[in-house]
View (cartoon, helix red, strand yellow):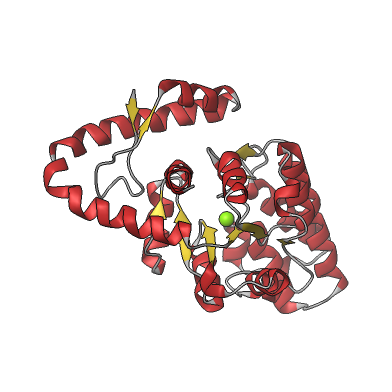
Length: 297
Ligand SMILES: [Mg+2]
C-alpha cells in the first residue's frame, strides 16, 4: 500500500490511502512516458511520506486544518471553472510548446517580420507570448488572425499526444454527479478543448460552457474575461464558484473575477510559482480533491 501526501506534500503528512490497484489502473491507461513519470512520483512521494511520518505527531493539527479549508472550498462550489492545460491534461506532453513557438518565430521570419519580436521573445518563445507580442504591435490584423489560427491547428495536433492529468476524468464526473455545474476557462482554443474532451467522452460534462481563446487576444488570462463569460452564462455567483488552475495567470484572473481559487501543481516548480503569486490553496494531485468530494457525497 502506498501512502500519498495530502495536498502540499512539503507541509505535512497525509491520511489518505491509495491501494496499489488504483495506482495500477491509472498507470495502465497512460502512455509509457507518463507511466514512468507516475512511478517516479509515487516513489518520491513514498520517500517523502516516510520522512513525514517521523514528524506526524506535531504536524497533525495544521494538516487537519488545511484539509478542512480544502473541504470547505470544494464542497461550497456549485460552479467549477477548470483551466484546461494542466488540471485536465498536459496538452503539450508530446507536441512540445517550445517547438510550436519556434515554428511561429520561423513563420514570421519567412515573411520578413523578424523585427516584430524582441530578442527575448525570439530566444525563449512561448506560443501565447509570441501571439500576444504580435497582437500588441498589430492589434486585430489579418496577420494576428492567421497566427492565431496556426496556433489552433498546432493545439489540435497536440491533442493526439496529450496526457490526461491523473484523476481528472473521475473528478469531473464526480463533481457533476454531486450536482455542481462545470465550465472550462482557458487560453487555449475552444476547438482543441472540445477535441480533447471528445477523446475522453467528457464533452457533455461541460457543453456548452467552454470558454477559450478568441480573436481578442488582450482578453486572455490573466484578464478575467473567460471566467466572467462562464459566470454570466451559467448565472453563477462568483462566491459560489471555484476556479482550478495551474499558473499565476489563472490565480490572477480568478482574483479579479472574485472567484475562489484552488491551485493544481504537478511539480515543486509550479507550486512555488503559484504560491509566490499569492495562491493559498495548492494541491499536488487531484486525487485529494476527488477523495474529499467522495467523502462529502
Ligand atoms: Mg494551464
